[in-house]
Length: 207
Image (cartoon, rainbow, N blue to C red; front, side):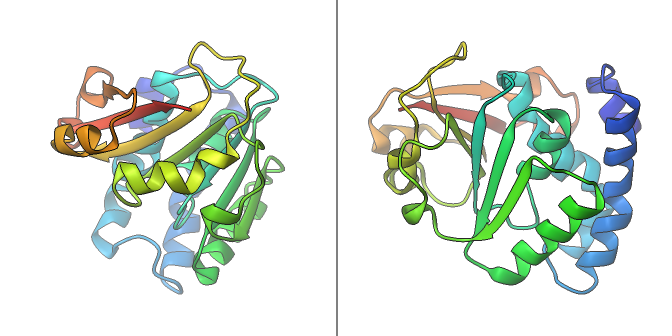
């Protein structure tokens, strides 16, 4: 929690309480349904929560925005972003039903009324329904864009054009070249001091 408050000191008391509950909730549910590697529970706030919130360092979602989280797993990046942006609607999907059960239970425990969790595949989400798609390195960029591009709304009202905000790490030059579209990368090391973020990026794909 100290880590979060260092980088997001402006969060409300309610948000602090919600973020503080995450460790207990994920420890409980992870013991039953493995959605986070066992060793990562000890670094939950750095490697999952703060990493998810890296997207918020690139773009502040405006009230009324609708965001799709593809391959959410245990709820990342969607759950931390939903806490941070209570006036934004988040649709969290994963093809594995037991992971969605964990997401739903966590959202219910935190009273996150702006979260919808669903077992679904990205190819079948509604057309033109979302301003942004977020995800944590589900696959290579090129196939991912093909999966989700139909879901992006043409109604753009942010400083960045509607599109994808993708959390990835390592050398992405080949992957970006393979996609061939207009891509911009944002280094999370510019925002977070921890060694974990040295090679972590937010990849932005306007659509």
